[in-house]
Length: 500
Image (cartoon, rainbow, N blue to C red; front, side):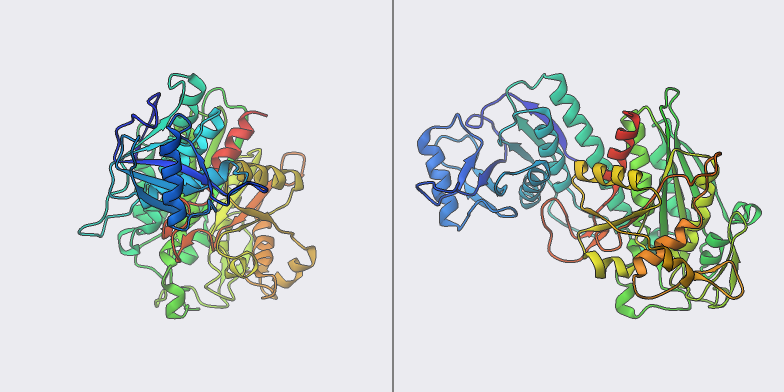
């Protein structure tokens, strides 16, 4: 994580390795098609003109996603300027992406200043968060690599303003949480067995006030967690259920977050093709997001109880693996006929959803890289949101929009439940292939408990299968590999719940 600083120094006098300024497309009806420079209003006109001319020479238009590095010009105290496109009418997320893209492009430079306009605390938060997310690198297995930016200074008029400082501090906590999730997702599966992920949760909780419980294979067997045990029984590295709890004395409510933590998914005996396994170290992205979000809630000292449930197992083929047509007895007693061992995430989540519901939280959110159907339906940048309560689903979507993460509401058609009927068990773990993302959510809904009055506990299911792991070119503040998607949404949701 880079240090995030505030300074009243001017753009023309700040001494750093690189300066970031914005570019917006020319406005309609303008006399020139040259992009508009954002920031550095105190610079001499000749200096501003020289920067714009350099940008035009490189083909810059101010479109979102463009970053052009140009040498410093007369009137500046820095020798390198990153001109980052914000697009027209840039909102908070556009600013996050623009600064993230610039800071990502400046890897190898230690100190960077952001000279874009900062009219309020919300803008400061967006710029700081984008920069911190862009300043990321996973270097565990590299002998040498370009180090990410280590220090980011926001140039503002009033650096001691409490609202600005609070906004930047929060941005740092949230970005650090995303970094934590990314690091876990990017770790090679040989180095992240279920016990290792459980230990990472214990370490993440240290010094935060969080409490952690870890159920090993013996405790899972004693408790009747048949879904987690069934998925994990084909691996030589046994499963875990990890429970993290942020429980401040003044808590105004209780949210439960449940994360799918398949540390590697071979598909089990219903084995995946080779290409289908290449990114399956990321099948624990939901658990990583939950772990990171609960830690952030503790660091931000949010006045709401947040419990995180990490359902962790490795899905491997072996002589001890579950077989298609085996029947598992889930935590709580529901029986499931396993027709496809590659539909394993819903089995571990089912156990955790029952356990989370037993504590009677106000609402439950599960996060999972659950289905390839999500990618088919929504692609690699938009996650699906389903649920049993329209108002709560809307609250999750509102939190995601505020956080800058792309989620889309999806239905839960009642007719899909019949496709999960089994002749030998309470239900089967797969149904119709068509609408597979929705079918999986309908399965999960069976394991969400009820309130004391008999109504279902409000629940939302986030399918992040595509957005959790980026395999293409980096963009904005998103690097290749684990993205940490859903962390920011979960934190924003907890903040919203605390403000009710």
